[in-house]
Length: 284
Image (cartoon, rainbow, N blue to C red):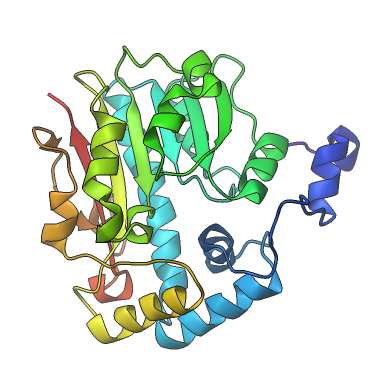
């Protein structure tokens, strides 16, 4: 990140001052901008804040869950980087959080790590291009694409120029598949994203659930759907069923994100306040 206003490019300064890409529809809420609001960010619009506040009215712990999910991302990336993974494909990136992004965690372990970010919200990619820069020994790239079109993601020039699909990589799908209902065949989408990945590749996935507080979490999901955002919560068994056949779950398996390899000595919240599962799986 630039250290002063004098170090910023015109695009960076425009973003900081509130510039909005012309293709952004500010009349409809977007899940990435609502998530940014839950995290305490400022890259959101009144329509996003309104929908987020309606969610908080029925799921008061939504902010806690969002922060726990981001912390899980960092721990999971650190874990697979220490296993030797040096390539990361982050689908459903979300709006950048200073110092708490995939490349931050990966390049802290191995500066040569290479990361491709993918999102379907133009404002996410605008901020990513303007505000994210990785270690000079590694690389970062950004793709405007949708998880529903995995073939377009894998064939995109920015991906093929940055990542080597012949070498192991980590596919990251954090808090994205609860926006893919059963009728859109999420298992098929995940299968198409992972089929070409070589042995040693990893999958990092998190997913909202109503297992712990069905009344509140189902009500929260209903707010998203009424706002025009598809959402389907899934049980622990349903989340595990998303893992491609033959892939092996890394210990502790499917776990509440705050409880997946927590920092030693950290206080663990009640799972009911999180309502989000996380997992890491590896292709043998």
